[in-house]
Image (cartoon, rainbow, N blue to C red; front, side, top):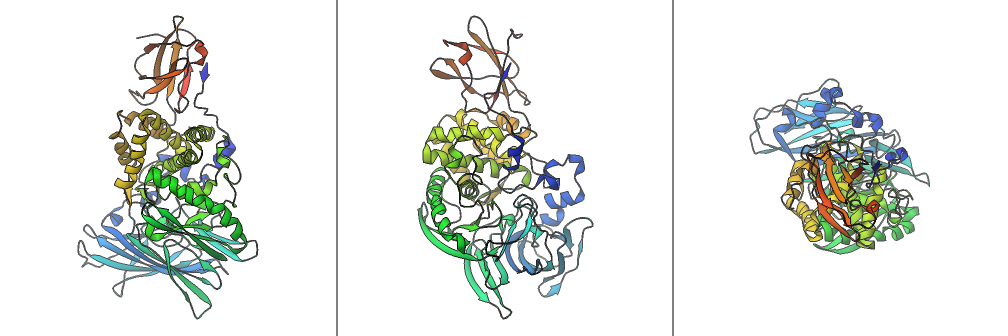
Length: 569
């Protein structure tokens, strides 16, 4: 008989809802690709090619004009870059059907060619580039960008109208890549130190992008250029166009680094709804600053921007489209009841400011670091507001959405995401590790330490795993390997003999898997045991009812009980 203390029931329809942070739609094939399916285009998109390796981005100065009448855009991006190695050709990414018109540096045109059947352009660079020097190349482009068919999961440009018939335009392109609408070095490992974003739209449309608004300029042709500036490093998929009939209201949060500007941009007809719903921001920030450390982008403000799609973690301009209601579009993904106590999009997407924006993974294959920790932050928010057991109930409830279909970590170097389980399985792996640590002060210091020691950096999964490992009393390497690199979760196998002796071991994919687990050995007490995969161990039960035996339910594991005596080594 097999019992599931993990409550790992899955409902197929829910899998459509769990991809909140911007995963690419499976219809694009990216999530379902086998290793043999990867192409040259995948490698050019997802790896540090020789044409990317010799230079680092220091600053982007983006100028884009948006034309809603025919769904086209045009503009230019000046790429400021530092030479870090022997110069080769430069790879610039821009996705079809957009086209590069010309590329200039120091007043001279540079020759370039698109690599066949890819979205990568190789640019012939001047021969006199010097190592450690900074140069600027400007890429001019135009065209009709890919339309996002099912945003935010399917990326691209969003051309909509609001309820009053006004233009409402946005971008959302995580996974697919920022190059779907502007030319850049489209790889997460290289972030500019800062960025200028200049978006021109027809009057009276308001455009809201990342960072602080520096100016708005009315042009002679009936357009307005909205100039925003990001003073912190930013990953390129976070750069956003949000253009519509917006009004703005502000507030101030007294945070750990002083006053933090809160700025909210919503459609005029939704102003009063927003004033009420966005009251959740301050307690959320207070909770996350307590658990994770200061908000990482004080200089750029914290903004929520109403969008014609569900939501996205656009740094300092979080996209919000949850209809000013609690839950996920009014539903509780956890089934626990706690998910209706907060606005899912506000809490989830804002948590990405720490997990995904402050700490960004080098390769999209490690995106569990973004999504697993952000999903875990939802538990933390519930705990802050309603108590520790409420947070645990929420975490356990999310297990119904886990598929355990394939590894959470994807293939490296080909822009390949792992399983959508990176959300709720990643969450419950972290929740399990918290039980192993069994010291909330230590656990909180680990979460804060990650944010502090990797502040504004790009990382690998291994770096995060090793950081946690060095700060706990157990070697968690087998735990990370089992939950991240295999589809299955560990199974606690056990047999209770007639003399009340418990025999137990792990069944796992990882050799020598030895995760400790707390189990009920007596009526009112949990005790820690250390099962292993290569032998049966034993302990004495002191339960008045042997059927009540089981692991502490905050461990995300399965159990398998034997009805006959297993062979014992």
